[in-house]
View (cartoon, rainbow over the protein chains, first blue to last red):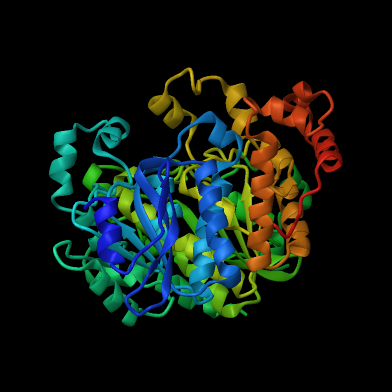
Length: 240
Length: 312
């Protein structure tokens, strides 16, 4: 789906989301009558220091007076790979954006990520993966690392990697793989109203606890994560 | 004499040991009070990565990270240390889950701080999706722990630096100490060069790497709170100081950080090199910064920029 058709289907009662060179800022009217804050990255733009600070500033400003959920709509590149961004401390800017979203979520502004295109690496961590619920739309193609780059680092031919990817969702790109690991909670149907699906999600919003490792275990994508985290937690709780 | 006392490493030993050269286990042993470290799911449990054999790669019994508890100057701490010599300290499923579990317990207990000794290239490619997700869970767990009042201190001075998602986790910590060797960045030098060309970033130009991503630059722009000399003892002292001085976390922290980062962009956004930033920051004889010994650099940095401890 295109960004315009997504926004139109999600907010039939109107929205004021603006796309400024790939940086999305605005809000939309919910079916329930309330409003949702909308931020995001569009047009497969890279997320650098300039973009990240605009997004975090918009989220923080809305915490002063606003209410309602926060939607994070994503079709991004990876983080902007440049000397300037690293010189200025890109890790702090991306972490700050993630922190702002996580803080908002914990403090009663539930966050929902909507992945409709690409995303990767640091940009993915600072946006979609920093939300409570991550929704995928058909056609989304997240990639922590693309197979050609993996091929270069692992020195394995792409065909060999593609073959290996059939037996495990753990490394290859794709929405289905990330869903199996517990990163993407639900995939929406793009042939029916997104507003209805959003309303249903908001009505059944789980509490803010991070259950992605348990979800990954249930779906068979991550066999050890939930068990290891749970055992370390138990042992650590005995510390006095 | 007890075994703990027989094994008692002296302060002299911690002073004589390079943090950069030491293994993760040696760092933990020398950083904490002698004999106080207790590991959770240690190598004897053989909880290896379930994914490396698919690539015919050797496993390590601790999957490249040590987590546990111990004491620092008598007070309890949780500690996690990455081993940069195994798979570049990269985050995989098991590696990441150990840190997630530690942080979740810290959040529930509220009173025991967490030290994270970063040494990582970022996500482990052979299990990239699981590693990326583990990093997302760690970031969330750090913020939840901090919201519950827990101090999470990052110490950065290892061979693999603190790259990729490791840099984002570091950015979520309450405070950071870094040595000159402790590079902090998202994209590594080779990644930038591969994607943007050698004109954008020459990864073989080591001086460029150090001054763009290294500990001195991070300290001077406020990306790290303290600069430590490259010894385990210096990092121990830095951790103690940061535990003492670090503020809490909330909306005021985030608003202060927003201002701090906006201010940085405004002041240095047009600078083309770290030296230009240092000049703009008022560092006298900025060109000589890379060659300054640690003690002289710390003196200079303290004069130039006081770090706001409530803006991270």
